Image 1 (tube, one colour):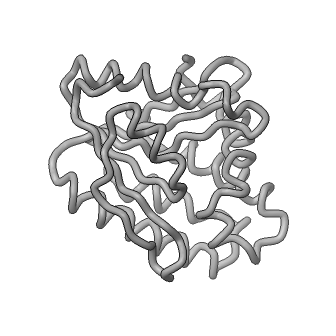
Image 2: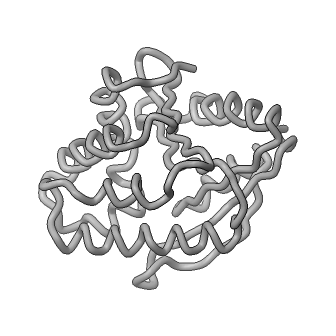
Length: 197
């Protein structure tokens, strides 16, 4: 696993855009955006650059087939999410819907995790590299670190099949519902230390 720094962000943004292009969240909220992949790539690059230095961004290798973004307890939770919306590439309606979704995620997260915790903000694997265990690799090393420090963590997903991977790594579902608008599924999951299998 490799820690990423600003010189790596362009490659990471490409992987994130490719991985999330057909993800339910962006298919739902970005369907009217022309050249969505290019817009996502620009937005992910902007997002990565806006993260505070205490955020931990990892790739599986120099090839950057997979990316994870972890936010520590001390990070203001709204800044990274909202910075993700402020790019010229995205239309106002899309930004507005994504901002509402971001606020919804934060409300659910702090309802279930009002105490200090790590937040898995993003986990993505390039479509050409999926099924090779890269996502599990990116999760495992960080979770072992959190176990050593006895720190909990939280994530959300909009894809049911992802919940099975996360459950195998010790996460449990604490919220299952639909996001604002009523059609986008949502799972909030938390993990307490010592549950890697």
